[in-house]
Length: 576
Image (cartoon, rainbow, N blue to C red; front, side, top):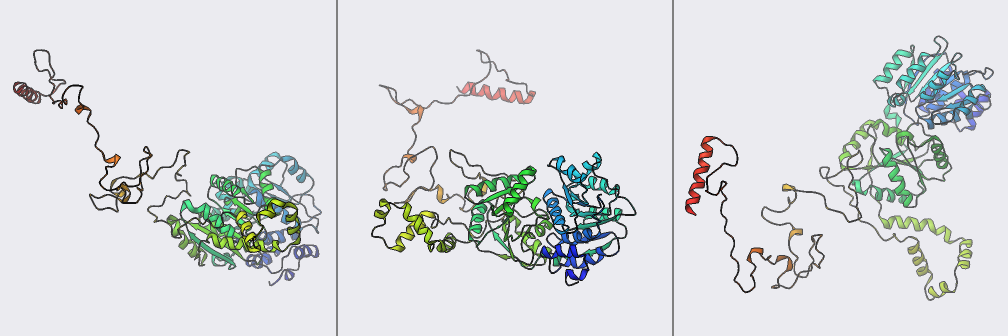
């Protein structure tokens, strides 16, 4: 199979396929379509996300559905709401000339629209397992005439906890006249057990993991410290020619915090995670598809099946805990034959994951260089140059500029005026904060990506990390002081000062006493008025007992031990 024309599709479906831009089939499409369009059979397809699985099962499903029947003939189960909406939209797009309607049912949305779509004769239902079970219990969804059940991303649905719902749906599928097509990225034990139990002699197609990752994705990793991640992330975004991409984080809280940070920096950004309600998620995705939002910070909820055209970059702010998700994440870019860039911010404790990812994907990942502020500034200026040539820009500037502006720039050359305006527009152009390219040693690095404690900043100042034992002064020989603990040298400054003292720490001339080195006065050595210095009080042991000096032990002891104490006190009394 070299093209979709070789499949002998119906004219209506072939017209929709051509309009959708399908030209050359992918590996999974080339192997699965001839099987699924042929004799009715169960099917098992293993391929990563981004390889064209949606078209691989949508085209044969639409070819088998009879639009004259106003009953549900196809049911597609998806792990997330976004994927369900996306698949339903693809079904509507490909089946528009055949008059086939699809309805999406998923949690977080009103039942009214979903019930209306089910009652109006939808031929194909696309939904999440939980909401499909709800409709089955209500009786609003009936599977009596079901011909094909499709499990899309079956491994992800099981890992998300939908195993019981899937088994409940599979038990209600009419046996003998319906077939099950299972598509999955991986085949773990639970997915394999479900396939063995419910699929009858399935035909299987598996795309090698070596073929799963597109060769048009450039993979780069940057060794960073955890504390430098936000600043380096901004540098990578600004250094890109036209950034339009996804930033993946490990937790919902990290997604929210990073989104707030980028909003404060002035980026067009929004976030996507499981705690957002459905309406907010749909608005976010629409803004991202319309490019009104250029950056989407998200969890792994967007790593499966999210199909957005022309995504240029994918940044892994946190590497995934399950390495298979790495392939799903970066599969959002370099789609439809285009190129893409995958960037990874790697802390020392996760450096070993780079080698595991390279082994998993059978591809090399190069180490990247963090761009400097000057390089970023040069790119910004290059982007601004075309606007300088626009006549409208000069006309609008002349309207705003009054006599004060003309007086201020009088005597300046054109280059000097342009340089001053650029500096005003980008004040941080020459403020390059030093970030070490090499990250700290893994043993000394505190990594916060997996829930370890952050060091909070307080409004009263910060404090140094706690330290003690031999590690506190490991660089100094025994008996000596660290540089920070020594007094200041001649003409220098003392690098460390107690917080309770606020005095200039510049060293005084040699021979002059230093206030922090003066001896404190002893309270017992103070002179009384008109008298001599009071001598230090001598210590005398106090013996317990009554006025006659009879010894009474303060607590009960053994006979021998009590006798020894009594003898010692008697000898002390005689000496006095």
